[in-house]
Structure formats: C-alpha cells, structure tokens
Length: 167
Length: 255
Image 1: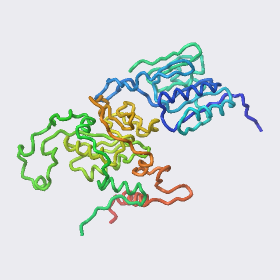
Image 2: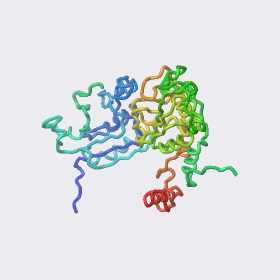
Image 3: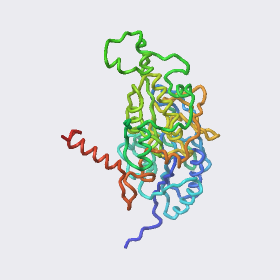
Image 4: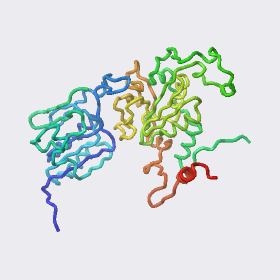
C-alpha cells in the first residue's frame, strides 16, 4: 500500500455560502494568511466594473464598486471582484485544520472546503499568447484565461503589483 | 353556477402559490408610490407626459370592425401611448416568483401585454400607462420580495448566483441597496442610471417567509418529487408528463 506523503503541497477551494462583503473578505484573507503555509492564493467571483459596461447607461460610473480597498498581511489592494470563492495551494496538509479553523472564525455563515486540483501546472496556449514563456510557474492558473486584459494583483513580500486599468 | 377557471395542479405550497400567481389572486404586501415605480422604470420622468405613437383612438376614427367594437381598448391603447417594457430578475434562492409564473400572470391577468420568458429574466411589454400599472401591481404584491427580485433592464445575471452577505440578490450595477434601517432602497433605474432620490422599497422578506411564498421547487425547499428515500411526485409532475405525452405523440390532438 502506498502511503501519501504529508509534505506534498495540496490545493483547496473555500466556497462560502454567500458572496463576501469587502470587510468580511479582508477578515477571511487575513485569517488565512495568519494560518501560514500558503504557496499561492486566488480570489474568484463576479466582476465589479467601475462603470456600466453596456446598455442605455453605458459609461455611467458605479460608485459602489470603486475604492473597495482591503488590507491583507499589511498590504492594501483594490478588489475587482465580489469574493465568492478562494482557491489556494498550501505547502502541506498539516495547514488544513488551521485553515478550516480560520474560516470558521472569519465567516459568519456556512462554507465548504474542497480539496482537489485547481491550478494547472503547464502553460496553456492562452497563457503563452499572453505572457510568452512563464518563468515563475506559480502564476499559472491564477487568472482567468478568458479575461480581456490582465486582471492580476500579485502580493509578494516586496510590493503589490496591480495590472488593471479602469473600464 | 359560475365557471371558476382552474389553474396549476398540486397540493404543495409551491403548487398553491403557482395557482395564486396564475389566477392573479395575489396578496398585496406594500404600497410603493406610483411616481417611484415610474422613476425606477426610467422611461419617463414622473409627472411628464406620455409619448405617443398615434393619436387617441377616438380622434383617429376607427374602421367599422366587430372585433374593435367588442374589445374595449386599454387606457394606454386608447390614448395611443408608446410601447414600453419592464423586466424582472428573480433570484433562484427562493424568490417568490419566477419568469414562467410572471409570464403566466401577465398573459392571464393583464390586458394588451406581451410577456417574454427567458431563463433569468422576464420582460413584459405594453402601452406605457398600462405597463406602469402592471409593474406597480407586481411591486406591491407578494410576487415580489424586494431583496430577491429586482427590476433590471440589463445585466440580469445575479439570479443564478449566490446571495450577498446581507441577503440581497447580487447586482453588478448596484441598483438596490440595503439601508441601515433594514429597508431596501432603489438607487438606480432599470438600466443603471442613478435616481434623483433613493426610493424606499420596504423591508425584505425573512428567509422563512420567502420559502413560504416561493413558486420554485427546490431540493432544499419543497422538492418536486419528494425527498430521497421518500419519493412522492407532486401532481404537477404527473400533469407535466401528461402534457408532454399529448404534445409529443399527437400534437395535442388525440383523435
């Protein structure tokens, strides 16, 4: 019988029962961050455009979707989506119970945690077309390949990079 | 004995609610001022004149036609109003109404209207002063829960998404918001143009209330075929099978 190694990285998805307000999202992300062991993390949800994208009101600013700034691990960045699910890769399975406890602390309603494969590890044609040869493989699977432009906020130890223009 | 039309089958709360919607015998829950409904529809400024496509019928001199004599025109048609629309989006999380039943309600109870049913939205077109009346009826009645249903002329996709943290249906354009006093406020019109003043739409239904008034069969509410291990199809399922069989085998003509 083969015993799975407990030092291999695992990928999990947190699926809250409802969409999170920025304050709750900040609380959740900080709780996840404090738990540690994160290799990479992605937040996913419906887009929050800064202005009406089509229809008779096209171009009208949507003030409710502006300045949704949250601070995670001491770095501030602007939310471009309504947080609906969080996918992350953990260094090993030993961080999973802590992650579950962090979600229980931060979320006022029920949630699911799924373990599985959520990030691809080889660049797709779309990845190649957009980024060429990807040097840092951790970036793969972190953004929507169908997005019309790069919508990516990278939080690293040094700085926050946001490649997202207003539309 | 006077004939009473019979509508939808089934003895579940969903079947009963569906019958209510089709028959038009819906409870009035709130009273939103007409001017506010007009503002949210966004076709004309409240108090402004109706735009028209033809002169009033009385001035036009209609041809001698027995149908025109038999059918009384609606106020909008008599005045020659433009055709306008109102479009609703109902959340799949136990909204009281769903597109098909809004359409049944419109087709059965509203004169001179054209309901259109889509997966996530439901549109009714009619002459302007008629559609304003029909929209107000929908807003004021139990067909609408102000948190789970909203008027959206475009960007309707919140119907199939999870609810927001405060129990509101997700709206990318943020047309409604939950006020601090627990009332839902309309802040933009159907298509996302900000209103001059916020419209108070009243308090949303509680989760239990929404489940009681819903017309949606759901596995975590009232399932259409009973629960796993205790299957008991609602009469609605039998009726649907019967209709399907008649339609498929004989094109509704069993002779």
